[in-house]
Image (tube, rainbow, N blue to C red; front, side, top):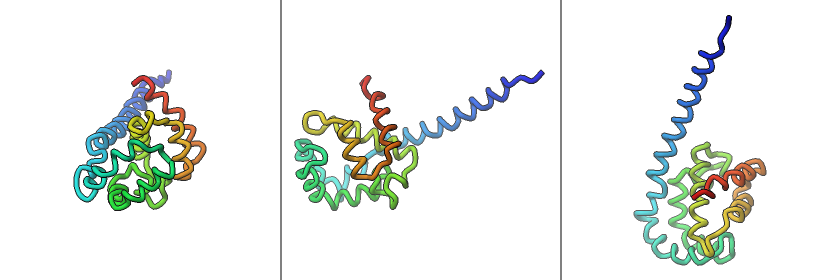
Length: 151
């Protein structure tokens, strides 16, 4: 008589290996996230403009102007950090799953330092327009917000 148990156990191990690859990549990203901001050419710009950014509302005209002032640092930052859609020729569509997870984790963390604590749902909405994010991915991001609610 056939037993599916060995094949299922092998499948479970294969899935574990795949998940372990993602975990390993995410751990690496956690270690190197935004390290380019700690040295030239980014450091001096972020030293100057980060205090101002904290007082602004994401997506506002003032926020957009601050980004223009940060352009030299942001150009370098985006070119060297895969979790930003601007790093990829095709924006979000050029990203992989690890890039997306790091990007979303960055967004969740960034709203916490914004004026009035920020609003991740509003941030997702603004970013969806800014980066032409598909409705399906927007829904996945919205569904993922609750993962951070326990914090």
